[in-house]
Image (cartoon, rainbow, N blue to C red):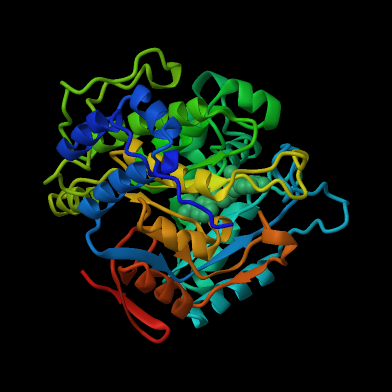
Amino acid sequence: MTATLSATPPPSLQRDPRLDAVRAKVERGERLSLADGDLLYTTPDIWTVCELAQLVRERLHPGVAYYNINRHMNYSNVCALSCKFCEFFRKKDEPGAYTRDMGYIAEQARGAVENGATEMHIVGGLHPYLPWSYYPEMLRTIREAAPGLHIKAFTAVEVVHLAKIAKKYKRSDRTAGIRAVLEELIEAGLGSIPGGGAEVFDDRVHDEAFKGKIRSDEWLDVHTVAHELGLNSNATILYGHIDSRRERLVHMEILRRAQDQALARLGYEGDPSMPVEPGLNATEAITAPPVTLTRPGTPMPLKMRAEELASGRRPGGYFQTIIPLPFFPDGSELEALPGPGGLENLRTIAVARLMLDNFPHVKAFWIMQTLSMAQIMLQNGADDIDGTVVWYDITKVGGSSTHQETTVWDLQRAIREAGFEPVERDTLYRRVLREGKDWRLAD
Ligand code: V47
């Protein structure tokens, strides 16, 4: 029997005319609403969603994709919390619990430099017994062992924990303690803040999956203070567990408003005629008008920051990149959940690119997305795939070990195959010029 081809293409290949209005906004560089986001998430026409995301990505980063040479290091996996989605944490005397000493940390930093790394990305659990002095000492140790290495360290959750153990945390003025510890950490060598620990900004999800962790308001406090102190930071969204797509969109809206505020500090005027979503507690205090970097001709924050520096003002920091993290169920208390599939991951990257119109970058973190998917994501909204990583302990794909290294050659090949020029960047997205393990910034 011969099979006959159906004359009607499957829904995913049928153009959804409802997306025309979104396309018009994207082409003009206008902010999309949560209702637009709902449509981007629910339309069967995923390929138009991806095409629109790529239009924006190409407008911002024509023809290039970024990677870096880095090391991830976890100083300890001992954690006072027991978040349901996490397979990383251990209790103090549990098998597999570890806390690194300064000798180990210095050795890691030297090893990173010998391998040409420009960045050390450091996070750990909320250790119940380590003293506050351990943390600035860790940064000083790295700075001494490897003076040129950028230290991107401590998620917002850790920073609040540090403010508490440093006895600087006051409930009546939460930001004072955060500011005090960040100032001391900057003095010791902190260069930027990673995006972890954000999970999903929603109280229901928080209480079900990571009760005990700080809520969105404190996560945002840390990043806002970091920006005020001139540090750049990143943001994540950990999706595909008990969250809904609407909750993800609200998370993105909250981040977008926080970025409006950071960009206003850098001198962006914004467009007061663009609507903002009403009724979101976390953004109520933000008065900055919306800024869309995706509007043709808008300068990137790197340029605004350089201009501020040249004028003698202390430049503010901002969110550089959004990193959608697909949930890995293995080994966690939510192991029975399936985790998001490839199409959901692809769509979430595209939606993040479209909704987060004031984030310069979208990172497809290859460790969690896989390098093959990250490569596809470069053609559908992402412009960055993170770096060589080497050791990764938070999630282990398919039960693999903590040694999850890829080579520069592999990263470059993945980027070239996707049709882009690979650009090595430093942590702050400045171009790196390299000869072996020696490197300098292009400008
Ligand atoms: O904070 C924990 C998440 C984060 C799981 O800033 C999980 O450049 C998936 O934040 N499945 C750490 N995710 C990773 C992170 C990150 C990674 C790469 C680059 C940057 C950056 C930041 O991973 C944690 C948590 O949100 N996470 N458990 C899990 N089972």
